[in-house]
Length: 191
Image (cartoon, rainbow, N blue to C red; front, side, top):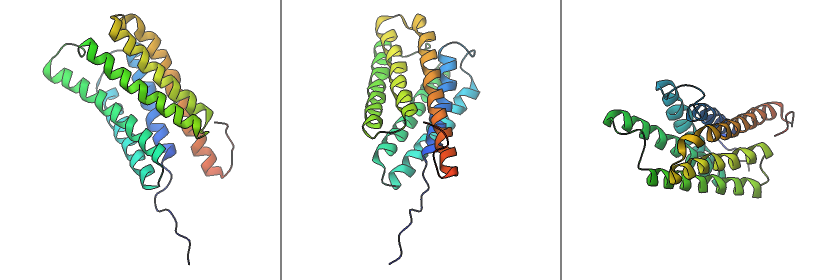
């Protein structure tokens, strides 16, 4: 009997690039290091982050990888949620943010998701740089939740931005390592 071949390629590099690049660019804006939120970053988080990650997640589910499917799809939904918030704020000309309590709970729930994906990556002995990225993503979201709950968000945003940039760059490095190592058929880059 012929061996069955999986018809869906490994989407890990795509998912990690979508996650890392989108998070890095969004964190530059959140931290106040790249000017105001604009259409270019919105396009990146909708398509580069949201759609790219959801696609990577669906492909991972099709390959039988529940962890990758849940992580990629979950983060894609996070990016899509954030983009809808920004679009709705512009359309309705609402105040620049949700009620602080809701915003705090939103960020706290996603921080829990981030720490859960970190725990899953750690248990699966996934790449160290990915584990760092997932843990610091949880910290990035937790800092914003604390700022919203305490009313100190403006003073915490630069810190959150730095943590988010670091997290996104760790994920991007992991994506590069996955891509290069996969193309080489051996470990050329440490991840």
